[in-house]
Length: 225
Image (cartoon, rainbow, N blue to C red):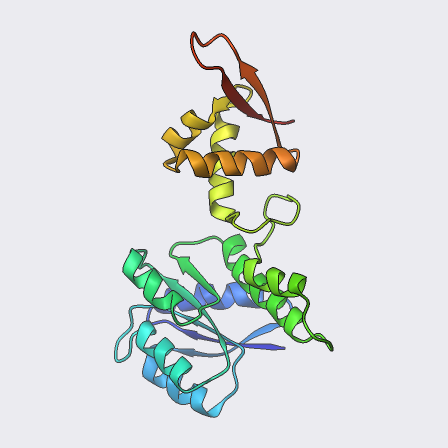
């Protein structure tokens, strides 16, 4: 049984997080804490597999608790669940080896994705043999497959992929060029082209070349049925 604690000062959010955890077989919420200090005292005495914590809390913030956990060498995975979506907060928590970072509000599917990362990592690390390069790559680059795509290659981010697919779905059965996709999605043209190549390789989109542009021919992409 995977032992989980929740560190969250909002009772409603704690309740939701607990219900989400308990939907997944093999996981159990052992304790819920309203501040980081109480959680740290518990972690000093008890072994915990996963800590789901907020960033903004009284007495001890999530970042302070995260630092203490790492400083003391406490072996547990951290999933941040917070409203903080600024670059500084994300970068600072990433420095201390968190498993995932979820911005409120989030769906159960996204929450489950974070826990799937734990199961994937746990399964690989508990093999009765030395890890292969493939094992290490799976552990580092793991992405939950929400779209039934083949295993994601390195550098392919789930959210970016979903966003690009959603834009193509919106114009279906029409098509979009990489330039048009970049403009409406906000991603760079280089990023869009990389993702379109990935989608083509996985047979999820098709393309055609429009030579009637009055200038340089353009490649149009569309979702395959």
